[in-house]
Amino acid sequence: MFLKDPDKVRILIVSQYFWPEGFRINEVTRTLVESGEEVDVLTGKPNYPEGVIYPGYNFWKCTHEKNAGITISRVPLIPRGKNSKICLALNYISFIIFGTLIGPWLKRRQKYDVVFVYGVSPLLQALPGLLLGWIKRAPVVIWVQDLWPESLSATGYVKNRFVLWAVEQLVRFIYTHADLLLVQSRAFIEPVSKLASGTPIRYYPNSVDGSFLLRTNDKVPDVPGLDAPFSVMFAGNIGAAQAVHVIVEAATHLKDYPDIQFIVVGDGSCRLSMLEQVNKRGLKNLHLPGRFPVESMPGFMQKASALLVTLADKEIFAATVPNKIQAYMAAGRPIIACVNGEGARLVTEAQAGLAVSAENSKGLAEAVLRMYNMSSAERNKMAENAQAYYLEHFAHEKLVSQLIRHFEDIRTR
Image (cartoon, rainbow, N blue to C red; front, top):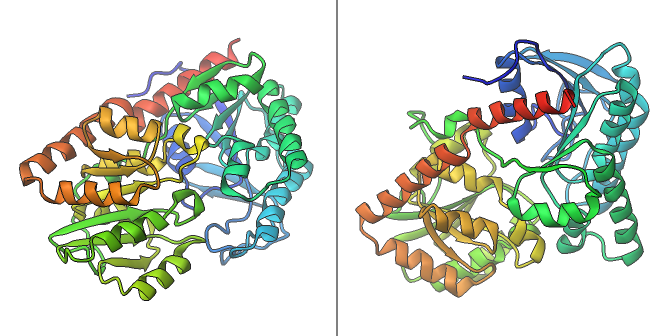
């Protein structure tokens, strides 16, 4: 199944987030081990998304644990808290500091062929990975999931020009000292190359685990609106980047269509404001049931009539492909995309649904109504197209096999 040399690749994964937190790197790591590679992980104490350290973990104590054949080393980490910019900043900084100071000591007796950094925000977490790569004389591969410093200014977390300039210089340092940069969107190649000074860049998209492909027989928890004649589900983080206010506006436009129900599954900084708007506007067609275990998401998605993805109308988000698009495609449901750029292009190219411009509430409402009025055969064709496109371009095992080839190429240079 996997194309690799007989010799194992010894890999150190550096990621602020890891199991039991629900991130893509978990499935990638497990499949690397199943394919015969030796994998260690350097990470922090789990606290996402609730913002408190998970039960069974101590804030200060460095720990080693085994899970599914993976050795996981954890450094101290300040929890991110709940809706606190200060706590979030301390959370990011603490991993950089403790990962840099303590990480090399925790891995002092180990040798690695490759250091692999899972580059979600903040990209600065790659700094401990670069240090470990230098100490271990191993090439460093960074999987860039977000554009920095663009994401800082786009989300409004940082507005000071000097701070943004300083972050850009750090990002430039990270890119130029890496040996290979993998980017999750083709549109990332140009902005990353401007700061990378010749470091090789390769397109390497996200995927999801195989459970999204399976028609689940597990009972899906009862959620208001999901059994409606036409249910539109949004799943994931409910934050500023997702511009979820557009869902409230679209639901308002369609409040006289009782057959159409919106369900927003997940949690985030904007969930409370959405609930307030639902109550203020008296919306009976918009439901926010909260967060559910990751394992239940395939069942939720497969039960919905259509799946919704939204992003803010910012240049950076036009270059981004939200990971939920791959999940939606794998689940085999029609997609309604209220996004610009790459995300909209994928949905349109796959003929997997309908796309409208970001933050266009009227356009979103019209797209929902248009899909509602389609025949079952038309919607089923979109669903089939979505899953077929996923299998061709984003299948998990194909991509992990590709990742192994990247590792083998970089260690032999």
